[in-house]
Image 1 (spheres, one colour):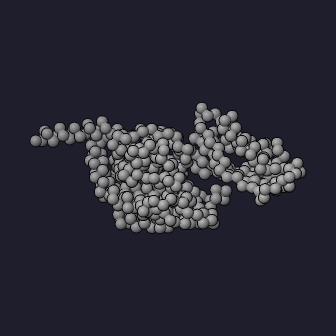
Image 2 (cartoon, one colour):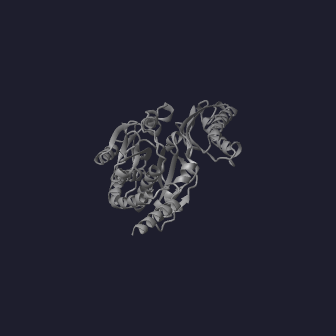
Image 3 (cartoon, rainbow, N blue to C red):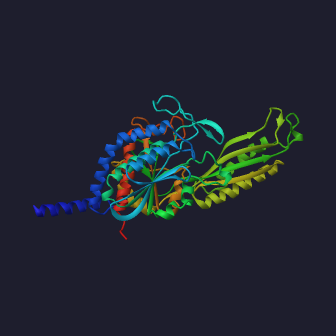
Length: 445
């Protein structure tokens, strides 16, 4: 009997080591089994949390109900809980029963100024002020799912605290989509950047940070990539000033509207003729143009706003210079003037290569083998600020229902964006498994 026990123990060690380079210890398999069991138990509550948060969305820096719900849940799990972090954020600390490193898990809480169509029994009817203007509010990007999955992960790991070697920091972050109170040009910080400026990582010193985002994709599939995973983001503001006059006598004016059209066209040559697209993609989009008061009046000025996206810091800085030059010189050629302001928003989100390699087997097991390489995301993420401080891994969870082609599914930020809730337990398993494997395999100091 004793010999059989020894052989069985040896088999467990070999199996765990072969399937999990990130773990390397026999008890990882037992921990992952426990994670799977507990995630299944909490699934019903997970979906209820998601629906509750979805029905009551809140804009960035205006979160109040959501943080209260989260804080009460974390306190019920006997965690140390901090509120009003970065104005409206919540941080929970789960200290394991054994000594070990600290890791951070992050979810965002804020919604978007989007009107939700009717249909879901828990559809949002919320309204809020967005820079002083009343708008409809909807979780059109999936942050309701993110918050609910991290709440579920907190419950899973809290039930395993005696076996955890180290500390897990649960970050429920506000204003990932940007503040609804402060514009980029005002120079104020929010979200991840403000949390770091307040000293969150300096105090807690996590060894790694993990995040997850729902996207159109096969339901329950986890996708990820090494290196750049999401774009940097910069706000672009251009004001073209001409000379006002009569629309029937444009020769007596300097028309900022036709000049603005030239500027918009000229900006595209920054992408097609200035950027080395073989090294890094670049996107320059003008999203708004405002000017004029009447059909027969050439206005004094036109204001444009847009966004700049890139995946390389050198290319990003060169694009800033080229955009400014193109706008100013194009306007000058028309006898007008262009004032260009570029406000950096978020940096490139970079997945640490060593961390990706280490955690790849964990992701595969958590998703039951449904893993894929993620394409470069045109979206940006302020998770990038965390990943600049410590090694980070940011993955995507497919939430398109079975039987629907993800390519035809409504994208994030669309009012018809839909989350297949059966995928959420995979996200909970993923975040929980990343935590227990990293803590259990990190060399003890």
